[in-house]
Length: 321
Ligand code: SF4
Picture 1: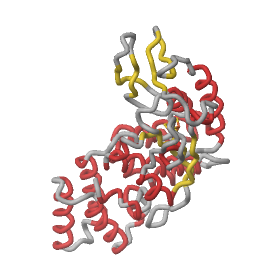
Picture 2: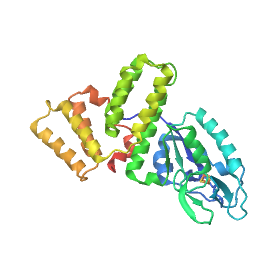
Picture 3: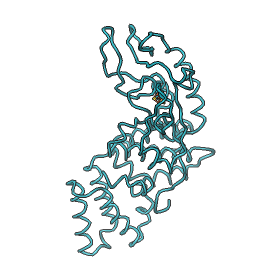
Picture 4: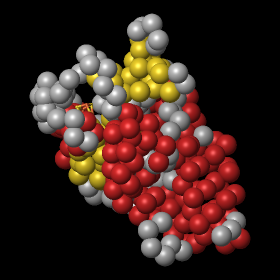
């Protein structure tokens, strides 16, 4: 691994209106500045508007989700026309196409009866909204691609959720690259080694379980190993890291050069890690010093850890967590 994260372009699915495409029911859009301006230069977007692409037209009547017995339907608000079957058939076909594109992530439009991932309004029998629905297209996407990092643009305004999502899309791309073609045991071990501290920050238990799985890689059928590794790796990374967990990993890093550091250097690093834990400085501050010492004292193991550089520094995500 190079000392900064790879800046290869990622392919990421997105609700078209979030990129500024005028595809909403009233020909409007919901351009999201972070997605288009900040993440955009690193991403090859795959825009999808389920309502336009399934033939509902532009402009079109407003729609909502409604409870209908045990199921939830997608209906036009004024006429009550039911579009559930059309949307589900479209979603299954489109998601099959998306699967072939090897996406690294997906960003969905919140609150939409088609694209919303969580807490979408569903009108009950009395016409009252309960916030417990999932958009019809989003539900099929989530079910078909369970390991794919998927988020809503609204949740990405939270600094920790944003950092977690971007970390996951870059990691998922690396995983896909690893397991494309004929991967070897040595490649798996090298990949796992480079992600050890990152995994440790997210989940100590999964970090240990995956280590045992990698040690037994030659004893398992290849497909079983691959699917299990990808599933557990992505489950670990989906857990948002607390400052306390990051602090543990920072202290673990410091242990790699404690013999080389002068008294003053050691005190400076310890103070910065404490300041981070107390919320006085962001994560990037102690990390920068650890990267510096890893280079200065030539600690190969640390220089190869994605924990120090999980995504392009230009995104400045760790300046806010
Ligand atoms: S939320 Fe989804 S269906 Fe609605 S306009 Fe945006 S992309 Fe299209």
